[in-house]
Structures are given as structure tokens and as C-alpha cells.
Length: 337
Ligand code: GTP
Ligand code: IMP
Ligand code: MG
Image (cartoon, rainbow, N blue to C red; front, side):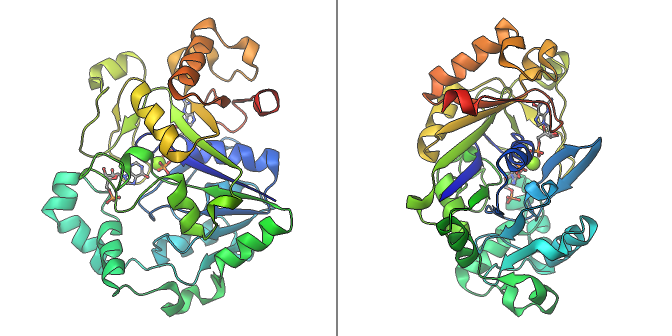
């Protein structure tokens, strides 16, 4: 049996979509199952020169032999879900748990018109906070109540545990990032749920004893969208001089950029129970590393940085992403594990 969880280590947008797609192609999971908050997430996958942004479906969709599932903990916006399923033509292999709670128009309106959420916190305006509040109040509708979702309903914990118990590989995909956790993040500037690996396991209905690996994804230069503390933040001018300009997948807002935060990385790796680290954006640190696919071809500067990440966290860096595209990666799992 084997199950791996992939989560974000900073404030989201670490490039989980890219890492998950790589793992899917190399390790061939039977199931790729999404945990996390809901359609506030935006994962970018670049593949065959095309760019996909997914908000509801697992970003591992590019790997065609996997079943795609969404766990009960995830909020569903039926319009976004149905639109992605049709656009990506994955109707035949997609399912969601019948207990997922539903985001309604009123949740979106409440999110966008709230001075606190939209104004102060800088929420994504996707209705996630108000929908999770209704879920806590036990007034939210569930997926089982929505006619259009009936063909996709399934019992995700049963599917996932059956696969694991019969020796299949299951990939659990987290969204957001550790510092956005409702429990452990920079409260109140956080999202509406915990975002750590344990939460992802709970979201999809897998017990902690069944998880073999937790891969925490960090980017060389952390980013943050929305308001809130960012201890290592640099000015946008400084970021531009380093050639780093990023915009949010969901909201189109410009991302704030910072320097590597070893202290946060260490704490994040600890709470997540990281067994491996995936590091993205090494090409941002040194342009010469762009697209490199072998450890020995990385520059000294890049290799020193990887050593520093391992020193800071006490966890091996097994995957190093050298650009946005799927094949731009160095996979050291065979050597380091
Ligand atoms: P959330 O679940 O919303 O947190 O998303 P995510 O972690 O999947 O990240 P997202 O796709 O929102 O943002 C990451 C961005 O970095 C995307 O534009 C990727 O294409 C890009 N990216 C990923 N890996 C690398 C890399 O190694 N180098 C560079 N330059 N860009 C990368
Ligand atoms: P909400 O989750 O829409 O309520 O937004 C709360 C905070 O979390 C805001 O700062 C958002 O920008 C941030 N956030 C939520 N989801 C993501 C994500 O997937 N990537 C990055 N930031 C996110
Ligand atoms: Mg994102």
C-alpha cells in the first residue's frame, strides 16, 4: 500500500500543480484525490506548450490513467466544477464525495461584499469563507442535494482506502499553503480551514497510519496574495529587478514576493511531518539553471541553496523544479530515499 500527500509550505502558489503532475507521470497513481478549501485555489499546469489553470479538479488531471476525486472536506462550486470537467473532458474518470458542501451565489456575494473578508483579509471572493461558516452552522447544502452533480457522486474514503489496501498508489493533493492555515497561519490573515498535511488526509478520509510520504513544496522566493504579515517581503521594485513578477491564477492579483524564510520553512516542515521537500523556482535564483534536468548541471549557487534548505528544515530536497513546464525538473528520489 502507498499514499503520498503533497502540500504547500508557504502561502500557496508554490507550484504544487507542477510537482503533482510530475509525480503523477512518474509514479502512475491509480487515484489522484484533492483535499483543501475549495475553488479559492488555482493550480497552474504547463504541458505541451499549453497552460491550464484548475480550481476544482486535481491538477494531476494531465495524467490520463488516474481516477480524479475530490474529498468531502472540499467546498464545491458546481458551475466551476462542471465547467472544468467538460473543458478537460474528464467526465468518465471524475468523482466527488457526496458529503462535499456547496458554495451558493449568496456565499460569493457575502464574501465579496464583506468589508472584513474582501477588504481587510483580501479573500479571493470565491465564497469559501461564508460557505465553510454555513457548514459549521450545519446549514450548508451538500453535493448529494444537487441534481447536476448526481452522476459524479461517490464515497471517496471508500474508493481511496480500497485502492491503498489493494496495493495501489494514491496521490493526495493539497491546496493553499501552510502559512494560510486557519490554525497555524498568520491569523486572521488566513483561509477558512487548516491547510496542513493532516487536514488533507482528513479531507479525503484517509487515516494518518496509511500515509507513507508527505512532500512539502517550497518556492525559492515565497509569495503571498492578499493582506497579512510577510516577514521576508521585498519591494515590488526589488522583485522586478530579480525578474520576478507573478499574478494570482484565481484573482489575477499581483503576488507579493519575498526572500527565503528558513524559520517558517522549518516550522512548516515540522507541522506537516515532511518526509521530502520539493523546491520550485531554482531558475529564479539563478537564470543559468533554467530547464536543467541534472543535479550536476546546477550552478554552485543553486546547489548551495538546496543545501541550505535541507539545513533549515532537516528534510531532504528530492525534487527541484527548474522552470514552469512539466519536464523542467530534477528528480532525486532514487538517490536520496
Ligand atoms: P495553489 O494551490 O493555488 O496554492 O497553487 P499552486 O501551488 O499549484 O501554484 P500556482 O500554479 O498558483 O503558481 C505557481 C506558478 O509558478 C505557476 O505560474 C507555475 O507555472 C510556476 N512555476 C512552477 N514551478 C516553477 C519553476 O520551477 N520555475 C518557475 N519560473 N516557475 C514555476
Ligand atoms: P479565502 O480563502 O478566499 O477566504 O482567502 C483568504 C486568504 O487566503 C487570502 O489572503 C487569499 O489570497 C489566500 N488564499 C486562499 N487560497 C489561496 C491559494 O490557493 N493561493 C494563494 N492564496 C490563497
Ligand atoms: Mg495557486
